[in-house]
Length: 474
Image (cartoon, rainbow, N blue to C red; front, side, top):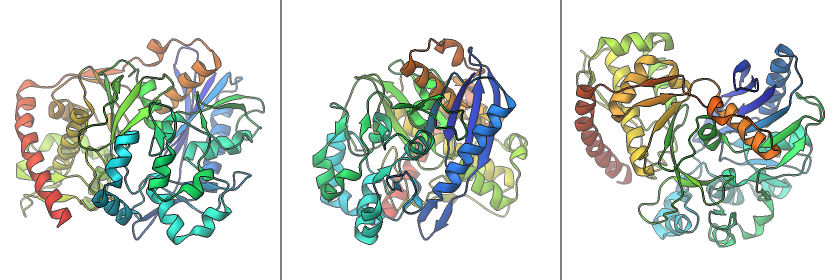
């Protein structure tokens, strides 16, 4: 049996697989997010406790020896720990917006662009650079007390194994890693005013770190690998490794990834290049801030249950009777395929005649347009796989295929956990059939007439977005 652990933003999961990649069992635990005044934080002890709980549950349900385990989780944010791996303060989430004024300043003075030209990382408020700089200004004692500023999965690996603090090239890609040398760019650290905090950056293990488990959640001695983080883990789990092929993750974050061997640091700074375990191979990533979270907000506001979505999408035609949604709901604005910290969502065309179905369809269409924008910016030229919670809605998948104008290879199940196992197997020299592990569950073809309609509407979306970005800067 193989176990993948995926420490998500709102849900922690562990999945057990047999040698052919068949999912044997999944255990999940929700974890909280504390939102207040633009701050978004998580309790590290709650997150770690959830990891141990799901591991205990899944290994109890499938009482077989665990050959090896792979670990993945949410990226970005700042998870400050002491020398024992214990929290110094609450973790600042990747969704956190407290550092938006710093990002604004760096956008204005050229620091933002300089960092992108060196590392391929377009900083946003919830990534480690701005957050560490904010903490240096407002909570220096927290940094004084910390032994390391980790990413989420690194904190979990530290606790599960007792190994020293470490990260991998994927998590380190934002914003300090030079993608050519695969090591930290000290000039970037200096530009962000963090030279004297350089020691907090965890050593980069290349390839990913491995260590035996101590016995919490997993039997003592179980082989565990730390990484990659959730976006590249999903790419592995969906079989997206050939240049030009892409993955759309329809989850809390709407993430677009395209495999590439071309490192192009010109053009508008946006997204990031995620380094992979294969030198010379990257994922051009455009992780928009909000995916299913935008639809969740609309559903909760209108009192619609998730199981009603498919029916409502059938009740109203493409275009949602003129209702339009720019789905930029994150309190920290947007980070891909552009950075606009003050951008907010907009609903237009709403009247007393508008229905719940119109609002739901318009939101799904808006998310689709945002995805198309990201995929185009990332350079999609090959096949497109799709995974994440949104794939549970067949009607939304049909809508997405139409909006994107291309077939979707739908990969269901715990794709991130699957990718974490494949990465761990590669690290430990275990021969697993990646083709069998990543086979799509369905292929959704677009309707030609609807795709043509949405191609025209997409151009209108870009116009509305340009106007909204202008208002955000005013």
